[in-house]
Picture (cartoon, helix red, strand yellow):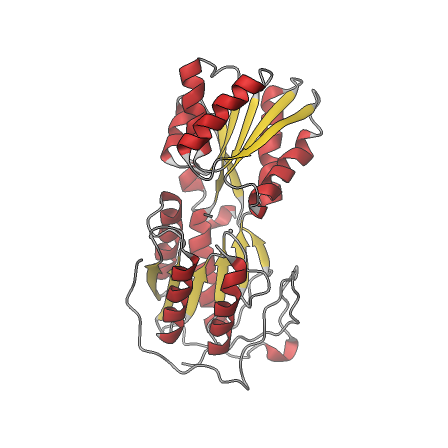
Length: 356
């Protein structure tokens, strides 16, 4: 079956976080240079050209397709939620699902897995832009082969893709900030931020979202410090110790690193300061969830990784079979604030497409 990308837009130049391999179907015909799909551009909305939209489905609805999800972390708990969504979608939309990727973050290995999927004739690919600049060329390889790609979690701007589905970082930060304001009321907000890397653009956009709303706090807002833990728990512990020593007025710690919430909780328990500092986490790793249940962590901002696996697959299936394009090129996968009030239901709630 030849796979054609059915819409054309001009190219506009505008990252999470192990080597797994899956079964692949035999290679199929790919589009040649004259009928290669046009680049999907980094614009607000992807609108198909009227004369490029197919009159009939591109594939028989009963034909099993083959999708490959190239994850940055093959067995990380957060990404396993995306795998669940991918596998559920495989049952619903009739495709063979291969989950592949490195056990530690390795952009080169991800690129090799994408290349393998293209050569072996995958009908569609899902991946993350863990190193966007380095991954643009392999997206062009998929484009030339007529294989649509959906990018999730962090985008690959400038690369041809059917759509991007990921958390809007500014929105995430704003929602988290408002939750903290609602909890602390008129109390001044003296905030320390912990990110994984100071030069991580997504993290910086999340911090900007927090600060935009913090500026409206009735009691006022002061950023005390922002530090990077490199994704290391022990380094995060040291940073929290330093924050508490250096800034006795500290009353809020916002974490934009998955390693940090548990580290903050550990320090607060050891110092008997649980009631003095409000902790906002990121993602729902076990230690963070335990911290919320124990009342040490106030809340965490949970990204909908199930949706990233499920809906990305749905879009690929509907596009290949019906020529239907996603609602936009850039799509927000949504965020949920998890507190003690919804700790027992949030994971199930996020798996219901009707709530998206």
